[in-house]
Image (cartoon, rainbow, N blue to C red; front, top):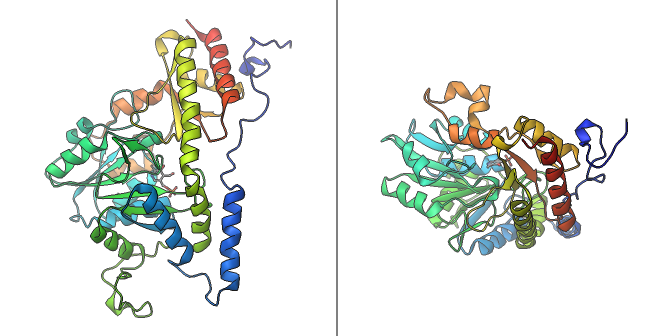
Length: 403
Ligand SMILES: Cc1ncc(COP(=O)(O)O)c(C=O)c1O
């Protein structure tokens, strides 16, 4: 078979990009140094690696500074951060918790395990994120809380959502896992609601090694309850609390503690988070501008606020192509561009979850958006070459499949 530059890679042509997209190196020199520092610290210390000690405190203090004040507790996983934050809200048993329909399964499972009824909100038209309208549409007199997910790195219009929720006595848990450091109206996401949860697992912009999470609150009382929820109901903030005496523990809770080595890595990752966000945003902005002027078929999803890009949805005008969206996305991917052709994090796609959801659960906006878009991966090492190659790949595929 002969290959030339216009033959698509899925049809046997040479791909636009023959080298892999840059890897992220989230565990880089700074993270390595911080980990070794922690290892040395405990090698020299008479105390073996404990819970809630030097590096966790430093990680949490730095996170609080990053957020502009408040209180933080690092935990074992992102799912644990949601679980702990939700338990800390102390909602009436059997009450309804609204959850965005585009989310990881951890938050849904946390609602179920804590004995609440999950009610799934659709997203805004043309988005993976909710607006206040989709939240209000799901409120009933049994609603006790909303888990507001800042999906893909976009900041929700969270002030309006929190105002509407609080006006009805509904608590708000912000899930910032995909958007750490994103800003809405001058404030970081996570600072608007009653409590926030953030995954710091290895794929997230802020990562603390393989796994991790952070619970954050602006108010001390709820933070203290979260601390107890994260470690068997222990009132750890009390000066007279004796760690060897569980008789004064407050209520049943599990152990979601993180560890010192993970927090040492998280500390280094946090120290470069601003830079991580800035570099990802530069890629996003440059790609958006170029695609807008050069493509007849695709556009980059317009993020609100100041995003902390996690992935980049590219919207395909289905009227203008002669193939299914997935074929189009697969063809771009085959040109050497890393992407997810079809996002699977829509709650209603999960067979296991359906028996737990109300019968009228439907998320047509989320499905329509997913069915007309694909998600480009992004990391802080993407630069002009990756913008160029992504544009070339999309235009090459477009030239073949445009109607
Ligand atoms: C929005 C959201 N919430 C929660 C989680 C759960 O985090 P983890 O995988 O660290 O348990 C994720 C993770 O992937 C996520 O994207």
